Amino acid sequence: MYWTYLKAFTFLLTLALIFGGGYVAYRYYVAAAMESSTYREEKVPATRCVFQVSNFDISYTGVAYFIGKTARVDIEVHDNTGTRVRHTISDGYTNYTWKDSESTAEEVAPDKLDFPNPRGIQFDKSCEPMWWVPSTIFDIPGVSL
Image (cartoon, rainbow, N blue to C red):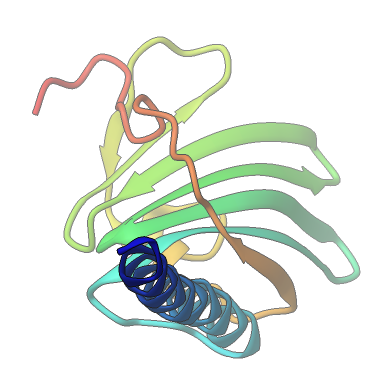
């Protein structure tokens, strides 16, 4: 009787390890795909990317968070006028942006952003899966949806 339970437990544990390992591998595969190109899938698992872009007169450093169709970018823009810290949340249709000093976000057209569209970041970045996502990461200041 003991061996029957042990066999069943071993079988279930093996299945859990196989499926759990497969899921972890899938999450890292998606993160790697986001690093190598512009990743535009509709159902992106929670992923965090750190990036840095610079040319002669402007540079961007920041962190982008992707979940499903929603993206958030926290970015520092460095140019000849100084440094600006901006936050943008995009659901694929609407962009909301605000500065650190502002308590309300404003709706902005994609072509009016002072940095690349969060869904179209096409530069070197390092991405990794987010296993625990803060519940407030996609809250937009001053906007009730």
